[in-house]
Image: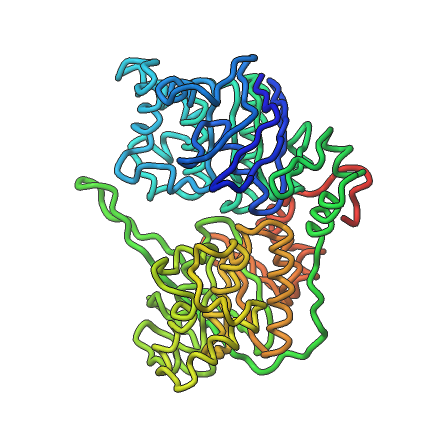
Length: 524
């Protein structure tokens, strides 16, 4: 058993975890929830012995009664993987891009001298099969960039369980996954807990996932454990105000004023896009159709949702709409003018984008003022550029003085607001939101959705809203498109499609959405 006993962690003299006590028992799943910055990931790092340099720790973490927080690094390194495994939120950054997936799983065994080179390769292959990676479809010789997000997450799980640890920590393991892949990964984790008898610490902002997965749940708020107990009890009869606020945020729907949409703004007509893939010197190139005769219309002032499994063509379509990807056939018109990589700047300014990870699109060396002003290269820098930047920041709920700060000085939700300000500063007609709220906790997500609704009402914006989160799409869109294998297989008013889906793919996506299924949780 892993026991956290009055664990306190200070960084720079400031407490980030305070007096945390928690028991992680074999064969049981503990859900750890809370807002961003509450201390969830710091708890995982403390257990793994991976706290930042200079961290001050009191209390401790015990493995079968033996304190491990004071162990020297050489001994702690032997415990990682063997006794405690971890699956990180973003598998692409956790995997070595220069190593095959089979080699990376085998390396885990070799580092701990648990197998010879030949044995490690054989066991790695078996582990990849165990986590659902068929070698005929996903051979061990593949590299991480050749896999989907769900497949990469399975590789990380295989690495984490290679040495059959007693505790598996999964830190937001489903954030970037579509709902069907998410369901597969969660089912895999449940099966591993049952078969291996390991303890699972599931860190997530998704309370619906917790309700379906966890035996017990612990709620963190500003580094303190404010509530814990059996999942059904905590989620149906919450005692602490913060727990109640998280539950309320889970069911939040932005208020969207009734409005009439205008003339067509975006028209996609028969869009086709092929990619040529090469597997090796002796392997013939293969043509893959990413977009297959895609047609739809988006009106002024309308929010259009785009959903589907990973690899269905959503991101390719988004890039084409933004003029970043040429089509092989068909055309795209924005405000009756053609969209293409060679379109003039005046046309390109009509559509701006907000992505899942704004930090990745920010130069960390630049202040917010310069970051928000970047789109002026499409319009020419106006004489009152500084004032327009401040206006854009205020429009998204930030302050004028924020213009002089750097991206790292803001929370995740605040950085997403900066990304919105950057998109809005040149007054586009269309904003493409590609998984723009998927990495946010439920409270921050609710505030960003409210902001999007207000900005649309104030400015008459059109949104192309791409998301794996079916509940978010229902909350923010007027119509929805469902994609499968490069095609639009269903479209219609969002409420109608959700209430009576016609296509099997739509039904499969909706069936895979995790729900707060506990008695008494309705209406949350």
